[in-house]
Length: 334
Ligand code: UFG
Image 1 (cartoon, rainbow, N blue to C red):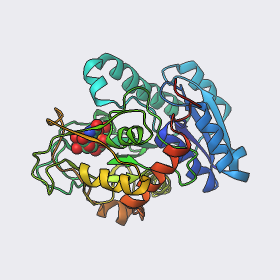
Image 2: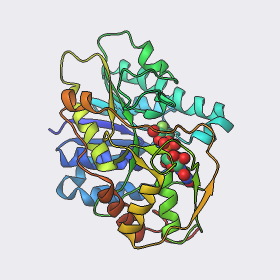
Image 3: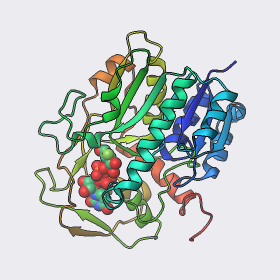
């Protein structure tokens, strides 16, 4: 019997890639997703990409705040662990609609933990973010770096029977090399790569570069971009680590350890796509840090995981996804 893992948000960008890696790794994946920001088509494509393992994927359209629905699911199946990827994640929107964010992200987590505990499932891999490092005084950011947004969840865990791994994602980019699954943001993309992609396919006229006066080689902001397939693999590594009796609550960075500027990204994407990306230079975006990249030693040492792909690879895979799916999972312009 394959071991069954519950993946919340499994129809989304990170979730779908993680579910595929789980299936290929011989796990059974049960996805819950409320399809607010994701598509059921992603589930079908993951099933196809997983070939003979595709039948090990089941999908339930459930809002995690719906405790009875979640109870029913846990009663019907025993989960070895939960990978909790579901959540709202647009920084700008969260400032405009804080209650929406607290209601969604916190209530989901509380209900999930309650139901897990009630059913004796106490292994969790949780998506955290490099955003907790704020504008770091020192780079690379290690797991010990001071955090300017605290995670109440990690703090409140004092029950040693739980095993929890928090993964601090840096900037996930790219797509599965097949080009069949990838990121499909609703509305105007907040993030650099989805925006560049939409300029490249002709959906938007130009990329606005936020800030050209940072103290970096070319004046633009520097981030640690990580291929989503590497990131998905990092979840499998974390899942394996949960079997280690010494794990209580641990934090790991998932990044490459390399910084890339906005203009370097644009150049790499232009090379991979053969498309010119028109630029509009603008002021800094409020809240943005200058340089953020990961210290990767802890994940390498303890998870035995290391990012394999670099900037050219994820630009090629991003363009493969974009050119095959210019409107994401929609067949044409809405
Ligand atoms: N940028 C532009 N133009 C754009 C979008 C972004 O110039 O249209 C620049 C930003 O100023 C920044 C870089 O591209 O220098 C990356 O910006 P993103 O919005 O893609 O990513 P951020 O690093 O700002 O934030 C993202 C997610 C957060 C997450 C964080 C982790 O939005 O949720 O990565 O580092 F926490």
